Amino acid sequence: MTAPVGVVLAREGGAYRVLVDGVERQAILRGKAKRERDRAVAGDRVRFDPATLTEDVLGIEAVEPRTSLLERRIPDGRGTRPVAANVDKVVVVIAAADPPPIPQLLDRLLVVAEANDIPAVVVINKVDLAPATDVVAHLAASGYEILLTAAKRGDGLEQLRNVLSGKVSVFTGPSGAGKSSLMNALEPGLGLRIGEVSAKLRRGTHTTVSAIMVPLVIGGFVVDTPGFSEVGMWAIDRAHLDECFPEFRPVIGECRFDDCTHRTEPGCAVRALIESAVVPRTRYDTYLALHAELADLPEDWE
Ligand SMILES: Nc1nc2c(ncn2[C@@H]2O[C@H](COP(=O)(O)OP(=O)(O)OP(=O)(O)O)[C@@H](O)[C@H]2O)c(=O)[nH]1
Ligand SMILES: [Mg+2]
Ligand SMILES: [Zn+2]
Image 1: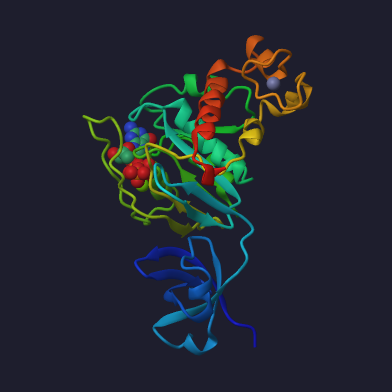
Image 2: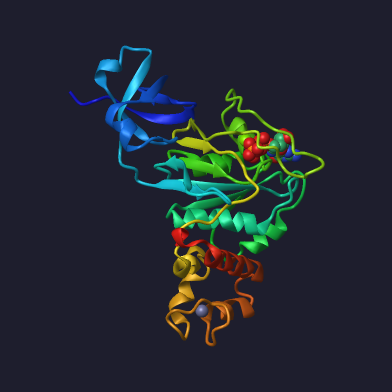
């Protein structure tokens, strides 16, 4: 008999909430699975010890190999933190206002998705408060799909459903952007906690505290993650940072020097894109900032 399988929805203390045959149950890692990997994450497919099926808490025997893993580095800390496994799509949610969009934070999240080889979509939420013009211009040459939404009014939810349907998607983005609000709007009755955007700090207050995966009625899953104000870059190979900017890719091989870093070298095809305004300078500014940051990482991050 093959062992029954399930998918991890959330980690709750030392235990996991798992979905087995459409039913939510509790599970813990045991035996070999516990020794091999101390942490399963939302999206992990797991196999259970058949003998525990009739018990209240299932025993996870093994975590299946992952097709993808979204991780981020803990800022100023050591090591990476896995966020979700077997992810098809990263949906970067930012607000048109309140909190104000920070292009470089948006770009970092997009670079994280690219470095993990996971396709990304951008959602600009709260378009009821302000136009999204600047962010749209910032990404004009990138080719990313951009959706304009207002969780409060229901704008753009149909398009968002189409993007999410049948896929495992992860919502990332700054605290207060409206990730949980969008999920609640998509799945009425979900009741995820929603936070206020602090009037003083003009940013969210980290209402969501850990990743939680939610099955969608339309098929597929969405993982809600806690927002953050900072995203650490981690072992991205600095020489490949340029490939994490889709609008640079077509010309990367055309620089005069093979190992061009696109900063000061003569005959740089990437800088030519910027100088001819094909690609907005703001995206290039992010590239320079991340390049410098990766250079500063301690040895064990290289
Ligand atoms: N005006 C307006 N406010 C919104 C919209 N969507 C969400 N909000 C408000 O924005 C605030 C933050 O929403 P959350 O859904 O908690 O944001 P989050 O991205 O999940 O934040 P974290 O869990 O902290 O990462 C709440 O006060 C929401 O009511 C929108 O489309 N328009
Ligand atoms: Mg939230
Ligand atoms: Zn170059």
